[in-house]
Length: 161
Image 1 (tube, helix red, strand yellow):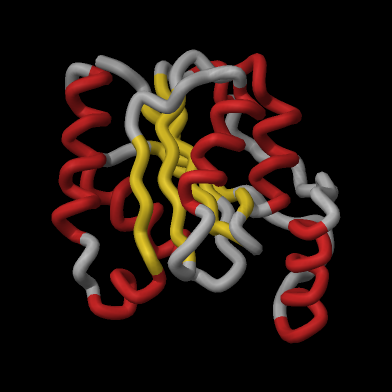
Image 2 (spheres, rainbow, N blue to C red; image 1 turned 135 degrees about the vertical axis):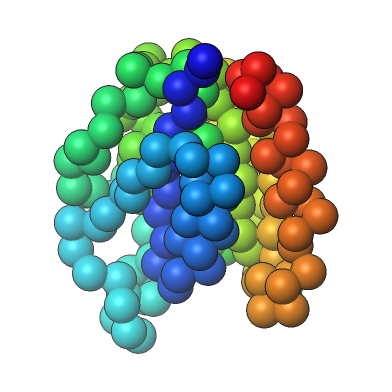
């Protein structure tokens, strides 16, 4: 049986809620990418936008789970200013040689998901076996379930579970 890790970053909680639902439904192991410096409130929002605009790789806390021990790693991220959020970029850059296979999902306000998927592939040197894009509106309306189901089905086919 294949081992799957779902690792995510969430500033507002949207990506976290999707990640936790997925991990719970399929009993995947889950871990979180955490900032070294807070991003809450107006200053945190500003820091996030500046990191995205200037393409910075911010410092993140050490993640406890070793991705090299998994057959597939699902990466969950949000999109900032039409780009992959900066903390996930740091994580992918730092662990790029530890992934066997990857899948990717993102939450976004309406634009930038395709760029984030492309960045994920470039930073890891791997093509995701499955991708999922969920808008903030779909989360607020709880209308993302068919897309989420298709994504998890792709993961199951890929891992033989």
